[in-house]
Amino acid sequence: DAGVTQTPRHEVAEKGQTIILKCEPVSGHNDLFWYRQTKIQGLELLSYFRSKSLMEDGGAFKDRFKAEMLNSSFSTLKIQPTEPKDSAVYLCASSFAGQDTQYFGPGTRLLVL
Amino acid sequence: QEKVQQSPESLIVPEGAMVSLNCSFSDSASQSIWWYQQHPGKGPKALISIFSNGNKKEGRLTVYLNRASLHVSLHIKDSQPSDSAVYLCAVNDNNNAPRFGAGTKLSVKP
Image (cartoon, rainbow over all chains, first blue to last red; front, side, top):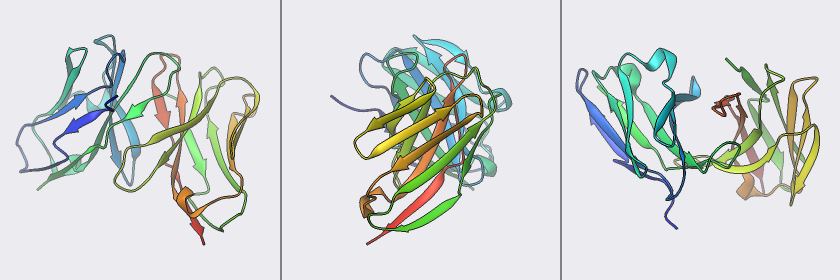
């Protein structure tokens, strides 16, 4: 079985650009999560979908971050406009539901200049 | 929102040592608690979870949960150099959205 796939693995953007990160969850999983990971803040939850319904939209991240789940096997995270402080690793994870194990993708490393 | 704190920040131990990692959380009504292992450049990998008070053992790993004291710990027996990684504690809130601690960086020296 394929694990969680994330593309691209690396992204470099200029300040003010729009970038879109992609995620394909494990086949059959109902829950999908987007996280941001930095050395200072650690892992922060950006968005959480259950069966394509948005359960959590990330509070402080709402204004420039938008996650969508277009179908059960594909999700995107759009950052618009990007700022240098958005430089981080963005991780996608999926699970069957509820208390189940989360499977993480390898992440996308974003650098905003 | 659930607050999760881990200690120590980093730990260096000799091969074969018992390792103890700590995690405290703020909401006694939280759901499952998970421990993840993360190697450099990789996504976290789930190791073990616990929901009820008490302990749970899987292989060289044992996890202890005390909801009254809002504390969970992970113990790694007979540590190996391959155990060197960052260990993350995650506490699921009532929506099953996980909140992560900052992590403990473990180095096991041969």
